[in-house]
Image (cartoon, rainbow, N blue to C red; front, side):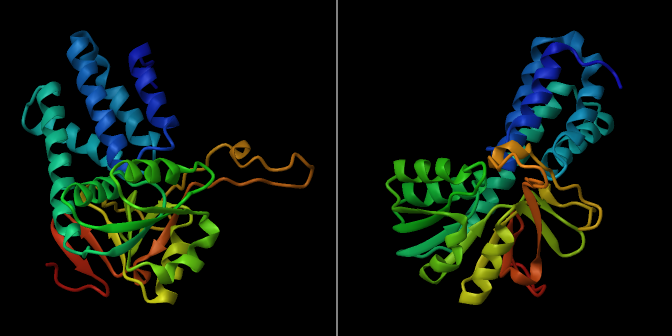
Length: 284
């Protein structure tokens, strides 16, 4: 494996160690840092391919990063674009996909709705922020999303927009689900075998939604599409000490951050192409 220069190595480590950003947010941050990297160090273009190869493997559960890098490499090869222009074009494409997705998702929210969400999807946050700024009245039930507690940041951001937020432990999802009108979650990867990947705990949210009859919507643009399946996808496992478990012989602490959820538990998917219901139906 080629040795990365210090700036490239720092960029890679930041991607590997960021456990709080949503997939789109992390992908955009990565692309902007790549743009700065090639702009500030023209000579570093020679080392760009090893860095891109490392980035595709850095966060296997967050396929939006790998897909973005793949699209970047194809654009540079097929269109003979400079690295700077190709990266900038990709940033615009990803931002456009998010904006179009949000335009569709907003139609699912009505005045007075209570929305339950899990983890801290940057796309969900952007959607809810836009609704609040446009004067739509709604409230949010937000899980803590342990062990990283990403939900705390989401709750704080929404509260700053004047949105009433109820923050709950992940274990209270079943208790609070009947109070929600709909569920919005993000998605880190949409698999080829009728599953999607999201922060662990999402499966319990989906089961609670099914039990309560609450519509469950997944906000997932096509940057998240993957040929992987439940049997082939690598689920990222973070350091065990994050759980602060007892240090006793015979106790194995597991901290798997992501899990698959079957789409038969999902009302539908919202992408930049529209709203799609399950079982498979026409988009709108």
